[in-house]
View 1 (cartoon, rainbow, N blue to C red):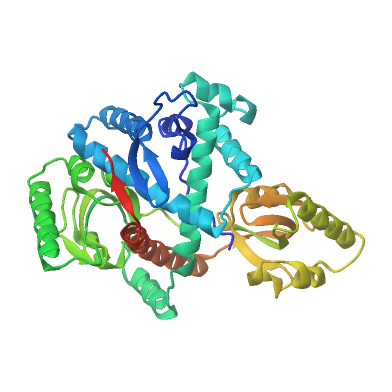
View 2: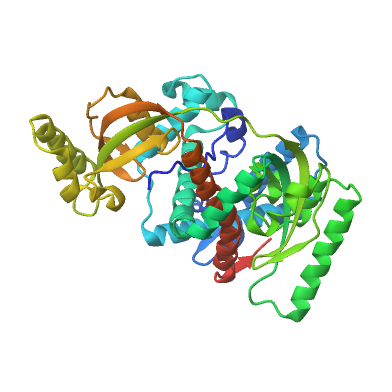
Length: 437
């Protein structure tokens, strides 16, 4: 439950270009009737505004130029940006229907992390953003949107990804048999989506398009430019960049193909339920040597705010529980009947021995600050309010455990990529969208 979320916030300078766009529905007509904006698309009962499209286009164009790539035709870039904003609006609408809300405490903690990574204080972040021409409130809203969409994807996609014991054992055996199983590949990717409702003519047209893109990529045409122009993937506007992936992290449908490729090689179009995929290997590097891992043994109690009990009420309840434990009551007994973490409550809140990276950042920070047997004050994460007790620390030769955990994580991640694309296509296919530009 407390696995760390993928870090979608980079350094401050990279984030600033994406933060200039406020939520589409915050703009309207003034009472005097002066036109302030125009609608770019109607998305169910929401809208995407032209100003948002133009703002995103400007930020992305600057990034593409800074990377030394050629800009695609303006109409192509506009369509890609508009489609991305439509998908974001659909995700935000679904999050609202499900009641997903990111509390201010979680936003503040994320922004604190951003500030620390840029060697500034949280209190100095607004001024640092202002110096780059970014309004702090707009930036904060954008962070909230990203965290909301990440939480939604965790609920709708990642939590439902299943990896069977047999797959895990096969992965472990494969890693033992192949000394190069941990080689890493820097990949770029193009998806030519095929709707689930496509007829034979549409399938033929999309297949022809994918083959034409593949042929141009094989002729050493700029792959990033092709991705920006033709890809339907969520990474299109990043030039299709997927970053570094271990062989065992690759999607299952290319797991036996990419390890045999060299830098510069391009796959044939590969059909999956989401469409046709084309991958290019940009670089290959060897694995790093394994090392001893530091582990902590901890137990916790989780309580979640709801319609009846707000954040302050829950915090006070946990503070009272902490006082009871310090006065001699059993942490294990209280956790078993009060903790809302179903995965650990039955074990009295025990989380077992875990390595760094197993928990979300705020949870790990609390553990780092504790002495053995000490109990934290109540603190907030995106999952709710916690108190945690540190039971011990150790250095552990976890080679076997690490291999198994890596297999589980890598199989889940590989499957999640494909499932996320399918999920986004379904959201889009089920929505009413009317383009107005």
